Length: 407
Image 1: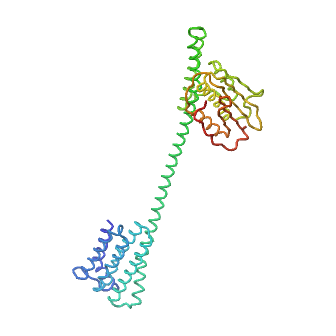
Image 2: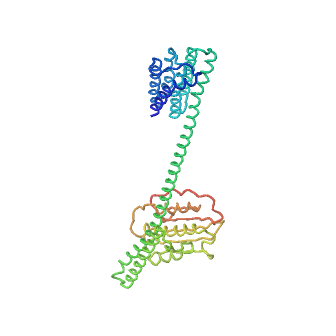
Image 3: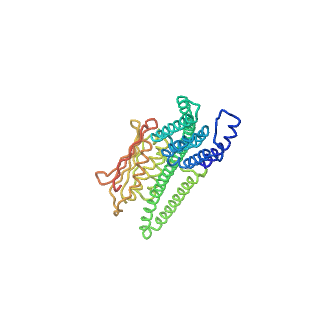
């Protein structure tokens, strides 16, 4: 398209040149349509237009060619008509700079183009007569600077604006990718959080239901009345599971009326009583002061979940073992909660998944707490959580490495 426009503009000016020379004698003699010189100039202009079509692909070759082709006009010396060759040269420089911003090779091609243009214009002016060599050389150099410099400057501006637009587009794309990554991270975090909640619900209630079902199986024939009580407890535990699942689904749906019970250190006593009602043997030691005083709400939830998970692990991996929950006094700005169980008396349940320990370790890390767990000398298992008070939380810690089996 650009090549066609250049050819039409140059030929049009060549056709109008005789009329302009008739009104302005200073233009000197010009070739007229039908003359050999006119057809020679027209052929050069058409050839230049064809070369312009290749400038974007081969700028380092096409640009010098645009300035070299008009040298064939030096012999016929068309005079002012020679200046019409600058139309294609200006268009070629602009296209080259816009397509490929100047680098070392392109700068060399631009310099060669300017030099060839100046040589051709100088020779044309000298052969046309009436101008000295020095004057013709000075005028030719000035014309070369204008013909090459103006489109070069304009092309650099256009290229800079294009690069700035591309940079903004890339920045926007990078921001979108970053937002997508943050969204994926948030979704992943929510999935992990929901998986913890589901694990806690299932491990706490279902282990109790399993214990009560095992006891009821033995009581059906020997003590039917007690078996009926166990059945009622199983029903109550099942209802509790459904209630917790409904609350969890309500949180996922962001329902305003989806509330959850307050799970704090003080609520550990009720948790132990629920486990006792399911048939577990648990000793509870609490301080004389309010349990968990000075501990933030998130740390309170972490402590509650640790006790809940530890008791569920004991029921699942050490059936029949006696457990102990001890909530200590605040010492040096930290509160220690310990859950331990003895040796199992039931059949070996097999290796555990370890996900419960992973959840406890991650929760402890969130509030800057210390979590330690492992086997005891008597063959049991102990988990100890040390929580900082609100004003003593500093940095979080990486979770300890997990053993293969929590019991």
